[in-house]
Image (cartoon, rainbow, N blue to C red):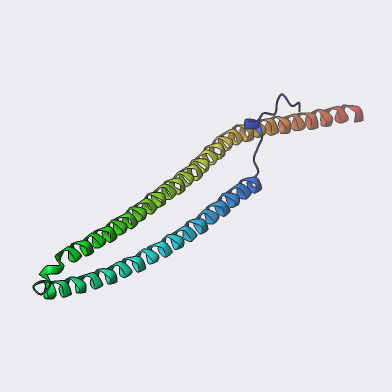
Length: 179
């Protein structure tokens, strides 16, 4: 057989080759599952850290609330110190700005996680597409194999008829020689 006759589409697949390809794809999917599980664990860890951070912020807010209560209780007594209280409020506003900045950072992390999930989804889509391509190739090969099998069966039948014909002729020729 020449190399002209063998094209990539015409190379027959064995069941072993298909099984190896399927196992390879399964292994890649399992590896991707493990990666996803690791990523999910990482995300859960980040959520845990965010929760801890929120608890810290809540504790600080509770401290601030307690301070406000003190200020309210002392407000009537310290009218003269009103400017100092205004300065304290400015500090609190700065702290709120810091907290808002931290929330913006958390939002940025969520956007990063969304991008990561989109990449994972894209990778899964490419794996599914590869599986579909392999399925189409297998189905096409099965169809081709059917034609080859039919042709082989026809050729085999013709060969059997020739053998029977030759056997009859040999009987006839040997029968003539004995007379």
